[in-house]
Image 1 (cartoon, helix red, strand yellow):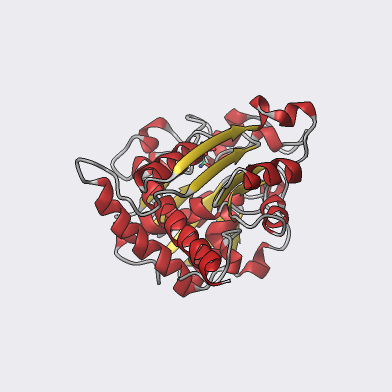
Image 2 (image 1 turned 90 degrees about the vertical axis):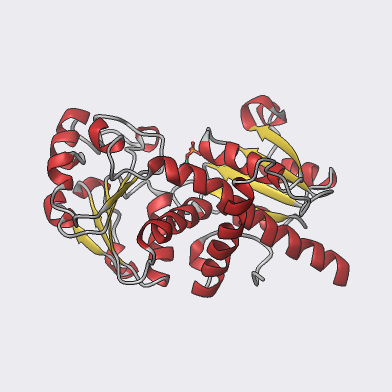
Length: 312
Ligand code: CP
């Protein structure tokens, strides 16, 4: 079982805990191939999706994951809740806790929001993205997809290209990939590379051609314009020319390299359409694997939460 009540980031997980989640996701993937995609594992449990930022993939896949496990689900978006009347995060969380939530899935613009919440609610808290900090379930589904496509993670070279500065996806992946023994390269314009990356044990490049050369996985990151302050980038056309992943650049990677992207995509900016839709792309597999990985996280945390209630 997992040692902690919550899933806040991959920084806190051991390699064995990450492998446990990936192995459990494998079992969940089998459930998803059945004609009736439903098991009674979490019957009677309540999962609350509490989203303060927009989401399509994470939110929909958590909802599906909970439903496949027979949990009851409640979806709360900040824009259509009492948050617009001024209710704070803690009061909202205490409210959903009082309504019987066993698991709270939180997406919030502030780094540390999930960790803050976890101290005040009995429910297990899953971080579904906190500002520029971590997005652990995205990294877990990425690790699952890499392991499925390549048969292993250890020894691979994984290159992240793009907006590293704003990317919670890159941060979680750096922790996870490093713990499982992959070599990580990051590449982007100097204005989109945060200081201190070398302390995380990654190789930093500003030349995309060098960063991509011989890599097993090319992970393209979205330009997060909503988090930009003025002057970070010249323009999208120039960015596409200097850093966009197109067929020509991809040809420098390993012959069997795969291409990943967390979505949503800015087609023609960070990734060319022919690459996003090409034979090396595993972007749709990432989305499908996201449901299985989130089923695994809900299962492992809700089970632990139930055991805690039973024994304490
Ligand atoms: N990858 C990801 O988090 O996508 P959404 O914002 O659509 O959930």
